[in-house]
Length: 81
Image 1 (cartoon, one colour):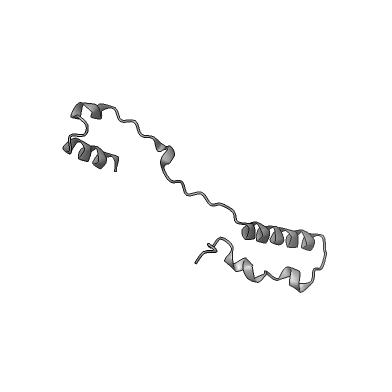
Image 2: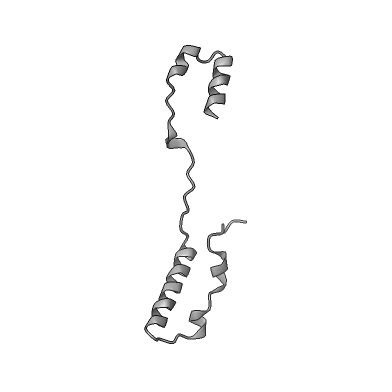
């Protein structure tokens, strides 16, 4: 992509061929794929860890605590549809 960009700039006479010997690229503006945790995702992972800790200690919980809530299957999805 960089090579094609430089070729177009040279063909449009925006830069001279001699300027191609050194090219500086600012990579701070390039997109990164970063996953941001959502509140529901954090809450669900906390619920699962608490269930595991309770089970390890031999604590029986009500079925309503052990069952994933209806919003749990939406974790990681966008709320705006």
